Image (cartoon, rainbow, N blue to C red; front, side):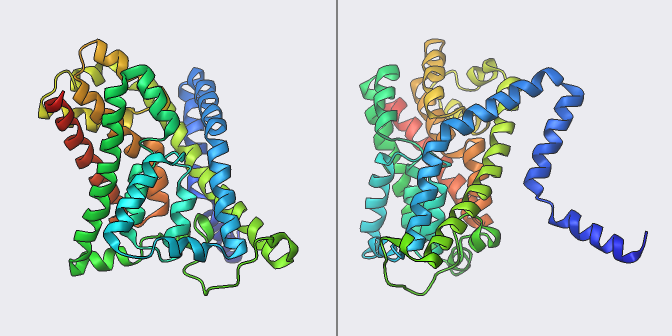
Length: 346
């Protein structure tokens, strides 16, 4: 084999998508070692991809439309003004938006790539996956009105904690540098958020009348769909294995009372063991009936909603490490505080 052939082969290996290779490797290992689990993992992954597809496609289309028409400049202007007001509005809007932790990623990427400050984006980012109108109604039906209202208040509070927490960190010189460029290079170059801050262009709402804008729409939508699709597929593959190999008894033993230790334990367990917002509610209801403290259940739902495997992978794929760590940190601390507050109040 010639040196040129080896060079081309090496380049081909380097160009292979690491996420795709990880998915293929996991499925190959399952096929060899646990063939019975392979079909279950594939079914789980496909089902969850279908369930999240409407929200994901909607958010991708909105981001691509904003980019093709030039309306993204209007979106960025909506996040201008006094920072405390922006953070408060972003937290409230996030608590009532219909986006899940993964479906909101294209919108977050678009906002960050347009230069919107990290603090209000973080507030919206944290609050969005924790509550929405459908989630509120289902929470009332499973855990009661009191629990649903408390979770809504906690959602807004976690958003405020993240937004104002970022604002406080930005006052440190080292943190300012870390948050000045929040998007990863691969995300900012078309993976999930399009290009960096662009020069303002005139808005053309009927973008399909111009071939260049049509091309921009389809290019942006295609890159977003591929970028998010591969990461979500990996996330759901990992989640399917977690559901099989992490026993419910372990969850219950970690969060059996309302003490600080149990609430911290419930928050930690919520990171790998959280299913999804709707499936987690009956699980928590059953665990509370079996002895889990309601405050621990609150912490489990909040921490899991923001830091579940799909959510973490989506954030990790999009944001640089300091932003990723800040996201997880504020979500965890806020969940613990909310769980303790609920235990002491009710």
